[in-house]
Image (spheres, rainbow, N blue to C red):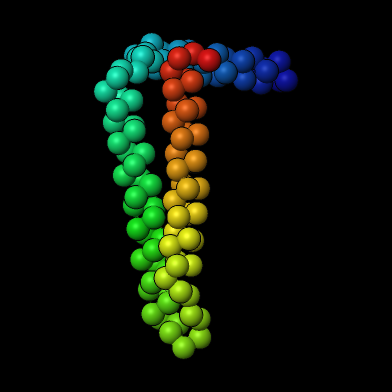
Length: 106
């Protein structure tokens, strides 16, 4: 009984490996082009600007809603938004760097 289960497990495992090989053969990894890099740089700036704007708007709404309880000055809002955008910028660069390293085969 145990040998049958072991054989079934090995067969299923080999079947899964074969399916993955077929899928990777259908969708080969293509090298990135200059257009891909330019689009990623443009999206880097767009993503950073959107992150900055989103955080600033959220802080403004928070400040208006809690008008009598929490008072955040606009300078502080700008600093917090800038830090948030910088964090998003670093995360974006790391993710894209990992993507390009994978495409280069490193």
